[in-house]
Length: 81
Image 1: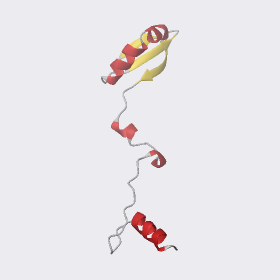
Image 2: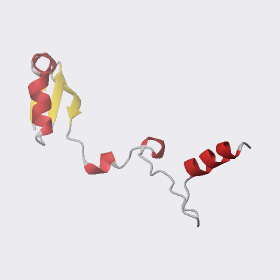
Image 3: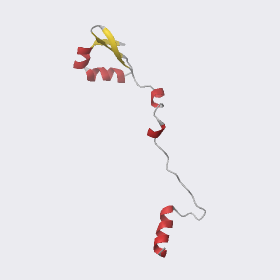
Image 4: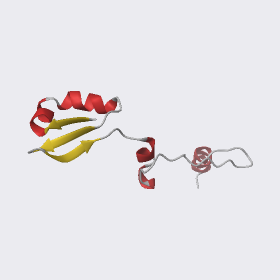
């Protein structure tokens, strides 16, 4: 774990993010007291994404005649309904 003062973090933020990306934890001090820790993201944190933000699979409905919804709409338009 790296422990650095806030002023040093400000001057070297990019380098500190690189350390965290490699798996290290960085503790930031203000007036000698710890105020924050930068820790690498874990797979567990990734799984806590709310359900409404997760990717969804499109719905695939297969009709017995094999036609898609788009084909049915085109046929209906051509028939003049």
